Amino acid sequence: GAGVSQSPSNKVTEKGKDVELRCDPISGHTALYWYRQSLGQGLEFLIYFQGNSAPDKSGLPSDRFSAERTGGSVSTLTIQRTQQEDSAVYLCASSYNLGGELFFGEGSRLTVL
Amino acid sequence: QKEVEQNSGPLSVPEGAIASLNCTYSDRGSQSFFWYRQYSGKSPELIMSIYSNGDKEDGRFTAQLNKASQYVSLLIRDSQPSDSATYLCAVLNSGGGADGLTFGKGTHLIIQP
Image (cartoon, rainbow over all chains, first blue to last red; front, side):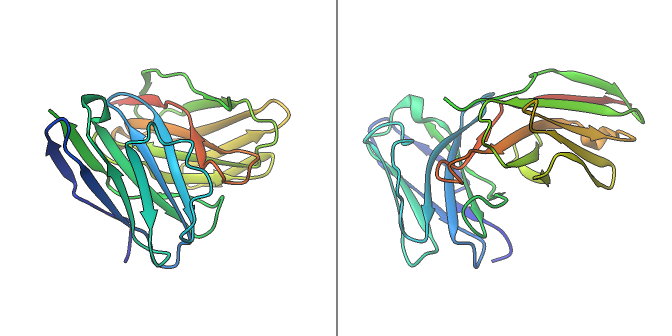
């Protein structure tokens, strides 16, 4: 596609529910990144993929968070048993290769009640 | 802990003047540096990248890099009200992208008409 596409744009869920956030990167971009931005805060790096591989999961805030990427394209970030502190905007970005310029999607705003 | 520091502002500049945004970083091995603009409620948008010491100009924007001082700046000439936004400095750490870009918390710029 022309840009990074994320869905849903907004998600309101109840505490304890699972959520899935989807990212479709720019076509041809091999690297894909997930960041989190809480209200008024900076960007917190979560995880990156080079192809389908995520070599380092240590940036994920807890074991309730997981991510996968299939076919070297679409990625899904899953948050299990959501907590109120998970409320944030989840941003996906892609780059042509690892270490290149990042292009961001519009984000998925998650609100946990 | 690799850090990127920015003055949070707000930085208030009269319309038509030069806005100067500054950033320092801790990872001496960093090689790639980026400036992003983020409007309220929107995702970060890439403005410029810079890789070599010195100045790089693109329209009204000039990025300046001094690796010895671990300092990068962004100048905006002929500031317009539409330039009012949060400007994020981002640094590619010496790991080459393995932990994404490290972002500063951003400087909130206000251009006064």
